[in-house]
Amino acid sequence: MSKNDDNERTPEAIRARLEDRLVEVFHDKRVLFEEGRLRFHARATLDCDAWGVSVRLEPETDQEPFTVSGAWEILSVWANRLGAAYVGWGISVPAKDD
Image (cartoon, helix red, strand yellow):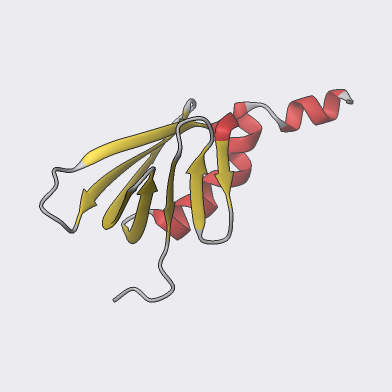
């Protein structure tokens, strides 16, 4: 592994690469939250900092709002899905925002 590869895996480099896209896709959007057997729609609000991403979720059900988070180094990001390894949560933007 080269020194360049190591620099691309720092929290700062990961944040620079992902933050704008995460905010564009997930911030203040209706998402499907999944963790273990839990699965429901919620409104997501993202807060990014040097450590990672915190996602405040306001469920459409009678549940209280809550926050999940993940460090930059453990985030898994796809076109319409964000998850955190080791902690097991994920959010995705539904195909239709009904």
